[in-house]
Image (cartoon, rainbow, N blue to C red; front, side, top):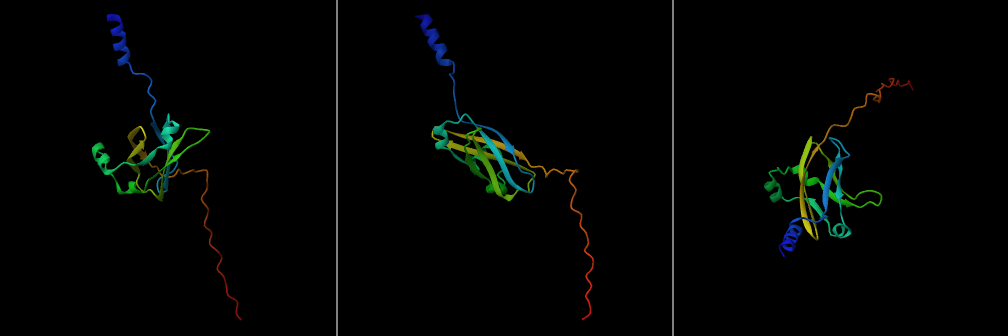
Length: 150
């Protein structure tokens, strides 16, 4: 009897496999002084989770609890679920206006039928790369135009 109870206790304390929705790293596709374009990979989403997913910038209370300042520029961020057949599903993070701040620190809140997740992301926006192999167009002065006498 003791043996069965010990096995039952051990089995109840060992966690089984847990599959839950997760957020991966953020991949940035834009630079400083451009509209923000980035994606966050979704980890292990199920069809049920995707169908009930709501994505938004976290509210002011969540920012305060996390000790993160909620900058005004963050109010322009938009979040959109993108499902893909050939790769992992992801969240598109974008803005319509150019981002002039060199870095953004924000909280993403995701709610679905069986849970809620808040995750902090910090994005460093570098200026667009300068390629010395590409020559800038050379400005040429036009020859002055002479008017002919009538």
